[in-house]
Every structure is written in C-alpha cells, then in structure tokens.
Length: 330
Image (cartoon, rainbow, N blue to C red):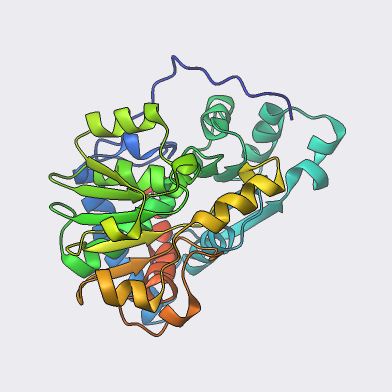
C-alpha cells in the first residue's frame, strides 16, 4: 500500500446524538451525552446476550471486517456482535496478501470495492490516519475505526469506559493509573480522550522514559481537561486509584527487536505483590490484551482483575450497540 495522504482539513463529524450513517473514527467525535446514549443501549444488548435472546436487529445486513493488521479479540468481538444481532459478516484478514491489494490495487479502491458488498466497514490498519482515509474514499457506507497504527482505538475505549461505568456508576471524578507503552498504545491514547469528556478525571502514566507519551499528545490531552501526571517508578503509584489500566509494549511498532526487548524489560508488571502494596480493595484492573509481560497470570484470581471477566465481554455488548446505532436500526 502506498503512503496515506490524510486530508488534514477534513474535520471529524460530531455525533451530536445521531449515530446513523456516521463514520466512527475518533473519540473526539463523542460528547458525554453520546456516550450515555450508547451505554443505555449497551445495557439492553447485554441482556440479550446473557439471556440468549435471538435478535434480528441487523437482519439482512452485511458488515465487512477488513483487518490489515493481526487481531483476534477485536475481530472476533465485532464478528460476534454482528451475528448476535442477526447480521452477517464479510471477513477479510490480512487483505494485503489475500486480496487485490497484493496485485497493486490502491487502498482507496479496496475500500470502494468492499463498500459495494456491505452496509458498513470495520477497518483495522497499521498506519495512522488509515481510518480517515477510508472514510474519505467511501461514499455510501460508514467506516468504523478498529485501530489505526498507534493513533486511536475508539471502540476499545467505549468498552473500557462501559466497564468503568458499570463498576462506579459514573465517569467523572475518577483517578486511574495507565501503565506500559504510553507512546505507542492506541488504547491509552483513546482512553485519555474518552476520560476527557467527563469532569475532574486524573490519570497517572507509568512508563519508561523512552515510552512516555509524546509531548504533542501530552499537551493536547491536558488542554482537553484531563489531569495527567507522569511517573517512572511503582513507588510513585497513588493508593487512591479507582482503576489500573495495564498495557504491553507494542512490539509491532519497533523495527529493531533488540530495542523492543530492552524496553520490555523496563516495564513494571502488575503482580499480586504490586496490588497488595498499592491498590485499594474496591479498584479494578483492566488490560486491553493481548497480555504480553503486562499482568502476571497469578493476578487472574483476584476479583479486582476484570480483563478476562467483564471487560472482554463488554466488547461484544458495546459493539452491538454501536453497530445498531450507526446502521440506523435503533
């Protein structure tokens, strides 16, 4: 694929309470009201799944899953969400090798081809700006960003926020610890964006110096109203956190394996001892997964560890709600 040329002058379309037909590219499109509306429907979707109630909300609709980058959870979650609602999926993993992209077809043409086959396109791509480029190319169907490079992963953040909302009943006045690869983790970037929609939130960023949040991103997020405090040692972890959010070092963002391995050794791992020392009894520990030297498996039995319990399941429920809203079926 050739270098993407994102139209910088193209502004994101705000949701403003109406999801139907709109691209979902960034958390910057959302307001607190939009999040609340989505979560009201998410509650309903959760009941459908938990009670094994058949649904035909997306009956007769096809959603294309175009994943130019490896994925299991996000890919599987979207596929499951579509099928729970009675729709069908057109699933293409690694289009660069199994589609006409391998013959030299442009990214824009690939998007235009698959919009002819579907009612919406869920896109994951390793390059920043790919989702916006796809939205510019597609004339007839909405694009949902399932992760573009180290930029954003908005639907991951929606499920993360829903997990926090279920636990605390609010999304304001929260204190969180975000640990790992703050520089490259699109889930960290998106979560900070999501928290900025609500008042009086504070996040502590625990990363090695080489993986600290970029200065431009740091300045941008602080202007959005989130209090951000950077720390480099577990000894600086505050004991009043409502949640911890642990991430892996993004190996796929490194050209040199040695550099990745060196930084991976510097990452603080969430262990039973770390929770015992610094975590309160009513906090929760999240991990967007995959778990690679981020959380010790010994932590899994701790009831505060929700990544393999509610967090992973909430991905299906929130994506069901989002698809129903974007496709005008709710």
